Image (cartoon, rainbow, N blue to C red):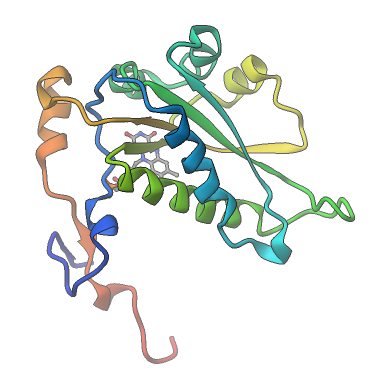
Length: 192
Ligand SMILES: Cc1cc2nc3c(=O)[nH]c(=O)nc-3n(C[C@H](O)[C@H](O)[C@H](O)COP(=O)(O)O)c2cc1C
């Protein structure tokens, strides 16, 4: 499949600027900005307006809670997420509130909320890096997550730091242009 680093057409600056960087400044994030991140998630669309998302966040000045999240990350993620002033866990309620039936759209809706949150963060000049690389059991135990909830991703959030603070192999990755499949590979104007 063909990939490219070029934008094929103009898009919103905020989408262009969002990037999963790994170098974080340890500067704290203003509490009102943290609140705005969750407000952006709040206004995401969801199936039957179920709003199945839940977030647990911890700032670095809450070391106990922050470490409960951090300690569940795999070693690769720990090597750079250690500087992030804000960690958050995104979760979903698996069942509908009204009738307790399985909500097949729950994780889809969480993805939309996380995307809204990420773009709001980009607007503030914050970097968001989503991580699926964590130990589910450790995280569930550390945070007492009930069975009714499924974990989506953990996110490391903070103002960008300097590339030099990263381990050598990650410095290169940080500076490499991103690649995406070209539109011809995933957009069709005809049936399969
Ligand atoms: C569900 C999900 C899980 C991810 N897990 C990790 C991870 O564990 N570690 C990591 O470094 N990046 C992780 N990423 C970040 C992706 O690697 C990144 O989004 C992708 O390479 C595209 O780069 P960009 O976000 O800078 O455009 C994850 C992203 C998503 C959406």
